[in-house]
Image 1: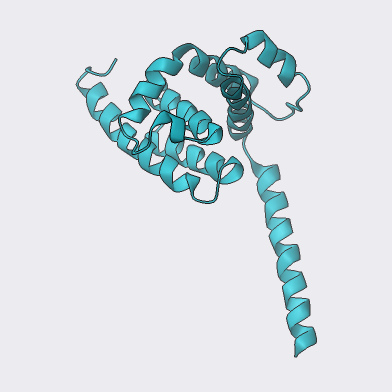
Image 2 (image 1 turned 180 degrees about the vertical axis):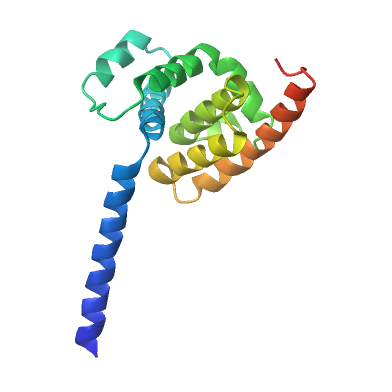
Length: 169
């Protein structure tokens, strides 16, 4: 009986590793772009937002961008860097934490999610929120994805209703 449990446990671990491998290899080019954008924005945040975007470009030259939607990566990265103040103001209205209480990972993901919700209205808000939650699961703490989901869901409600009335922008 003990041998059967050991074999089942080993098979279970192997199956989990296979599922992780398949997940990593089936990510879309846009998802990969978001993943790299989180890393670039994270770098910018931990350098106290003083990092010149050209320094980020130098950093990312060492990354493997195969199968990445480069156009989307640059739209996200520079969109967030250029609009960070407004994006923060927007998501902080819906958050129950102060900015200083956010981890740099959560902060980065909220900036990207807010950017997509506010400036990329053609992307369904559910897609934006789901992508942000997946990023939080990949890069964030164990419960960070719940926080990200709640904040972006509230923000989406505010933005979508405001945009319909042309009030937000």
